[in-house]
Length: 278
Ligand SMILES: [Zn+2]
Ligand SMILES: [Zn+2]
Image 1: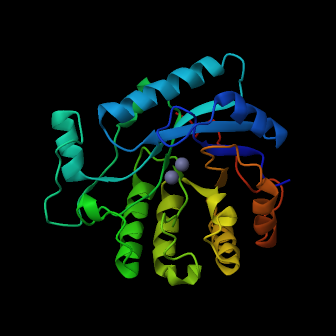
Image 2: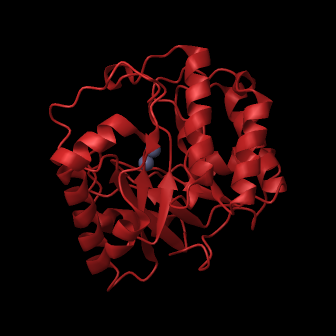
Image 3: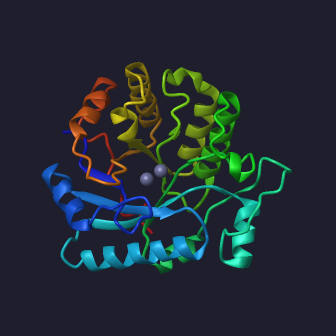
């Protein structure tokens, strides 16, 4: 067994998930995991997402009375500065229109570390989900080279931001535009991201999505496991994240098989250390 903990799980408090904590507890126990973290989304600094986050904190804190091995985390998504500023002013995204330029927009995360800590959040996954180098209406525009540059920009930001504990699902893309051959991502970009992760003491995530999605090619999966292994060999600790949303992910063996083929052995996938937790 290579995977002993799961640091990326969405609960029913998340806008895109319906998983009750009891089901997560059962699922992680069935896999023999020692610890796990709940990381609901904080996409925007509006009242809706803040409400979701409060609810997440409430249910996890209550659950911890009987389940000592669950930790409260959060998943942060880069958003564009014009939208962030508008929401700060008005409390809502409604009515916001991104300006035409200058692009790419500056990068913001919805919450400050102080705000997250006040809710009892103890770590954050930071992960790129869409483009913010274009006005919001075009956030999934799948032009390959532009999108690669934009993911690189956001991931480098996340690898340097003090709020981020774990760089979540590096090179995840909702439309799978580069899921045939991972070598399309320039090695120099990965070298920069790795250097920033290492220098800033960040973790990087092995997200089950890449190995279980029907959208990734067999070749991509092998290359991706090797990419994670190269980060591990640089001294960047690799955590596991099932990124479960609707059912608790049961297919950990399939992920472990790819990891083992890339050289990972028992003890190589990290638990979050107490030093890393806020
Ligand atoms: Zn995500
Ligand atoms: Zn997630």
